[in-house]
Amino acid sequence: MSFSHRDRRVHRFLWRVLGVAAGGFILLGGLVLYGPTVALELAGLIGLAALGAATMVVGERAVAEYEVDLRAVHSGGPSSGLLRAEVRSEVGLERSVGLRSRASPHARRPPSPGDGVGGRTTP
Image (tube, rainbow, N blue to C red; front, side, top):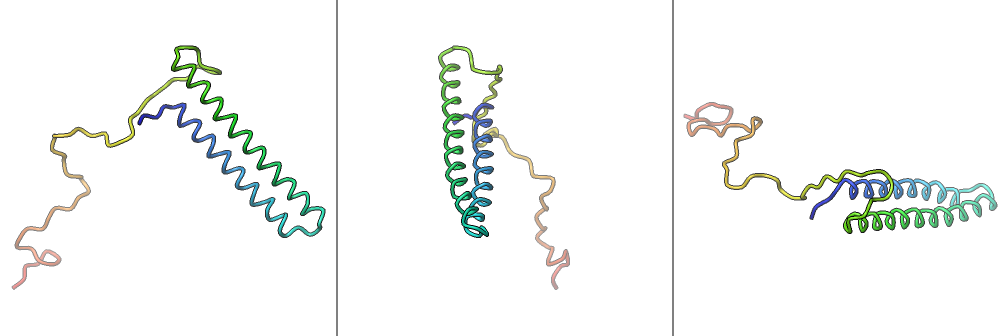
C-alpha cells in the first residue's frame, strides 16, 4: 500500500482535530462534573454537545474534501486548492534482497572460543 504526501497531511490534520477535541472534552467534562453552579454545569453540557458537533463537521468536511481531491487527480482533472506534489513511498521493508548485509558498527564481536567471562580464560 502506498501513501502520498496528501494522505499524510490529511492524517495529521485529523489527529490534530481529535487532539483538540479531546482537550476540549476533558475541560468541559471537568466543568460539568465539578462546576460551582448549576448554570456553569449546564453551560458545560451545552459546550460538550457543540464541541462534539463541530468535531464531526470538521472531520467530515476534511474527509470529503480529500475524497473529491483524490477523485479529481485520479481522473486527470485539476486538484483543488494549491498545487500539490505527490511523493509516493511503499510501506514495507525497503532493502535489497540477496546481498549480504554488513554488520552494524555498534555490534559487539562474538567472543573467541578461549575467552571466558570478562575476557579471562578459565583454568
